[in-house]
Length: 112
Image (cartoon, rainbow, N blue to C red; front, side, top):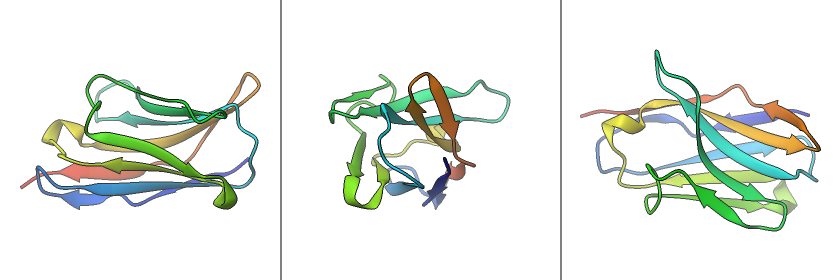
């Protein structure tokens, strides 16, 4: 299983970015986004299940939206009202059974 994350970049506070995760297959139990800031542990951001249910970390609730396009084997993270504390490398995660798969990450930097 390969996961390719893209869409990161430099954005000003209050701005928006859309991350994409392209998967080499479908049929995941769930797909999620995690992030890791320098010197910090990786933290969960958002998840979408096979049934389409979504869940968010409190820190991004109301600002981020996870979605998917099953026909493209893709999952997206629309990020709005970005804050400097959202700066991190964002990773795509997918679960099959009890196995986790990870993408290579895409850097998001929120700075003026």
